[in-house]
Length: 140
Image 1 (spheres, rainbow, N blue to C red):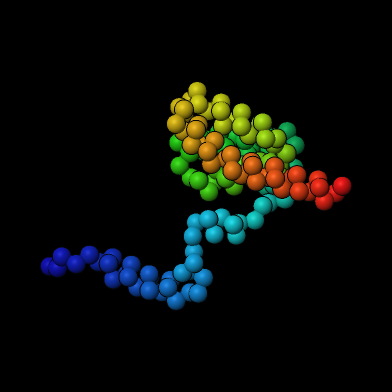
Image 2: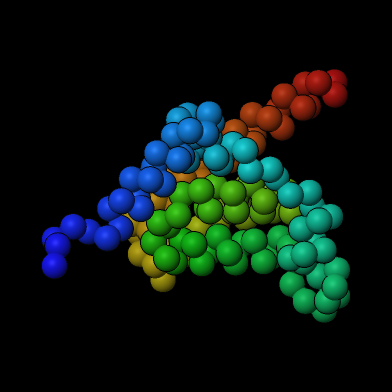
């Protein structure tokens, strides 16, 4: 019997293979997040909203609930929270609605989880406000 880990060779081979892909050496989680697109509102309503179920929840409400759930889990998934904030805004959620959704979770998830989610959401909200200001200037 050997003390060698059976997965060690496989992991080394996979790492060597990943290094052969040109883009993989520059891969970062932030870079991957930047590649993710923003789903248009109409598409969100079709897949996550009430287009197929008119009496159901709309996409904005579903995304605010998703944000609440991510906060309740301790705000552990940075990318998911930032993407959910972006998609909620695209679905029609206002800045204050996003902030209040996260803030409400302090009662249930605790202040650390709420603060972490807010720390993740704030730069996204600021970025979206700056973009909206630039768009207004361009329209004027």
